[in-house]
Length: 283
Image (cartoon, rainbow, N blue to C red; front, side, top):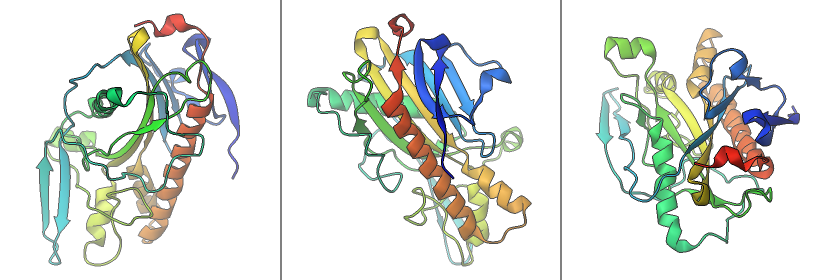
């Protein structure tokens, strides 16, 4: 089904962007912080958050802890949690961003490392214990903002999976089921299907949120502009359980399709986000 986009004002019209017309403005149903604009899908609960933050200089804290789980043939589950500040270059989401997101040749290499760390800092800044990253974050991908108002600024995309703990589990002091690596056609660390570990894989989906982040760096304004798209993979797993579906492959297909839509949404933001009133972004 084709998605219809329309121009949405942000922050009282100080910025504009093209978004799917079906998205709900969350400020119509609950209070949203002044530095954020939040929109929600009425069908999948995928959300997109625009956020204006203070510019992060070099020396930002390292990444949040990551978890890795191995399931032996007898069903025994072993989970390892690791805290690290070392970056790796493996891809979190298979495939590439839309052709709209091209490398930014204007950004000097000498600033890249600091920008990479700032990108990872913002990504993990929203993760609070007991939530954790599923795996170490990859190197952020430089992108080129297309509107002239932002084309001269460095921008980066970063994607990863987050293990989340439901409120009931938090209150009980227990962690949600961890995840383990899966098929290449789905997001990285997506659970495999079939075999004796199928029930573990299905349960592990109930803790996953896939996040794609766009960071635009405005050092002259002392500001970082963030866009986060969060795909609640756990909602798809719950929907499958509610319908009594035993076809986990179908669930994986729905998730892969939704993650693809999320990537397209971020690419649309890259192509259409515009600043109309710079007073908003003076840090």
